[in-house]
Amino acid sequence: MKTKMTITEISHEDLVNLLSTATYGSSWLTCCVADSIRNNPDLQLEESREDVWAAALLKGFPIFLTDHQAEGCTYYGRTNCVSVNPDESATYCITLEDIKHGLQDAMDGSFAPNCEEEVAAAARCVLHMRDESFNFYNSDAELLLQIIMFGSIIYA
Image (cartoon, rainbow, N blue to C red; front, side, top):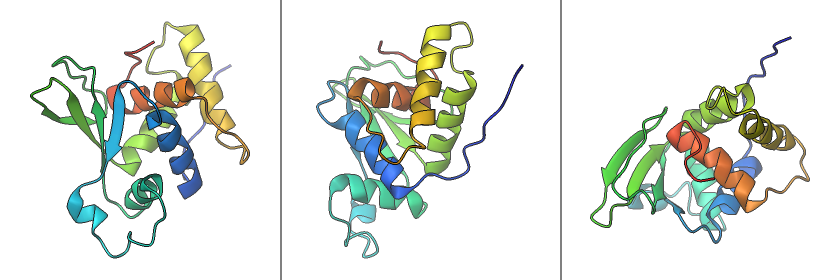
């Protein structure tokens, strides 16, 4: 039997939990918003950088995720790599729709149809997001962001 779950809405708290856990202490991933977005008066009431990221996404602005271990390589899943930096890192422009699609791919297993273990782990993470008391492990949040950014898992 095949089923399909659709990601229709992501809360501010879900975004903060995902982004803060994936970037906190990460050896390869950072996140930011453009200065023009950060200085937007609608976002200045937010408390933390993760709150600003989530608010920006929910108001239709993109965030920028940088892969610091790219070594000049880029991956083209649903998102676009907007720059390869002199230090060989790669920066991706991510929207709320990219996150929804990436989480959908994680649920459906379309990012790695032949890797049952990775598909099961990704689907489990997305399902846990529905639980308000759920907190990601860094590795789980990074796994989901790889699917969102790259359309596959690059870093095991």
